[in-house]
Image (cartoon, rainbow over all chains, first blue to last red):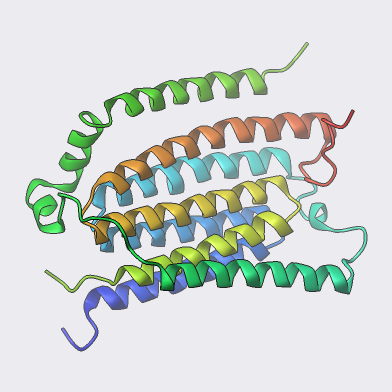
Length: 178
Length: 103
């Protein structure tokens, strides 16, 4: 290892790819291009999760977000805006200078607030009982599983009811009304 | 073990991604792109959970991310069903033209 470790190099490359593809995602006119850039951002977010010792969440990220949710979004984009996906983003009138200045100000204030909060925060949390070495000796997924089916059993069941409600709601909503 | 990444770097990355997502949710007109920006903001929060859990030797962050992913999946299913229905009614998913709740 040199002065900067292997993890730093991977982290910085992944962070740059995530930021660039996120910016491209919110600037592309075509929603399909937005969705494809977002898949790239989610993949490299999974790489960052791997670097942060969260292997289970990294795999779940690729399967749930980059696989299931983005497939659903691409499907709906193709169903919804095939014919006029391009002119939907056309605006009737250009925003005035005052609106542009106000928007830029709000964006800068939000970014500066979040950055200051992340840099100048005072961590008041106490260390937990799962240091990375201990989790590594048991296995990340096994630890998550024993927590999910032990301490968090009731929220887990509530989450499954939420999924059931989501399925029923989606079917009811997209059913053709007579 | 390899040298760990300082949690501040992950926090800053999370802040940047959240800002990008918020800007996308405010500025775009296409409802599906707004929805994707909200997913990006959820991902920034997930990153914050994972980084904090890693920094403080806790697994609770991972469990919370699991629940956030569950809610995001449900949100995707119901939200996209609503978009399909709105497209059927209005012929577009432009957020400026949708005023179905206006009395």
